[in-house]
Length: 129
Image 1 (cartoon, one colour):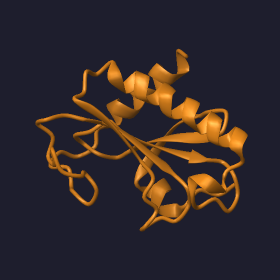
Image 2 (image 1 turned 30 degrees about the vertical axis):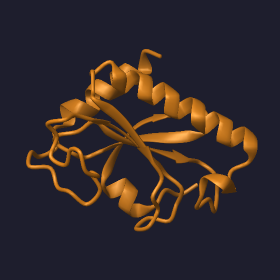
Image 3 (image 1 turned 60 degrees about the vertical axis):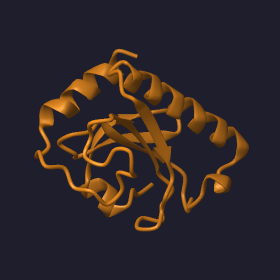
């Protein structure tokens, strides 16, 4: 299954989960992930079979629990799809001092460039589980 080229360009592969590919967005300030369910022609959550919806919920919970170790003020989970129609779920740690708090993060730009060490950290973190 092919992942949308914009998602691929904007992120780094972390791990293949049971249903989804886990990717880290190249953001220099936030731990921001996308889960891409590896099913053809999916645009909306409701397009998934019920069992896949349950598995996606488990994957979101796994990822959220890992992010909670960073002590964020909030975990954001969202499926937008206005720019990239392929079903993908954003899961990110938010902080009261981040660049967009308390507003939405969508469409904002990081002031710091992405550091590959974040990807290495998360690859190690997910290979432990």
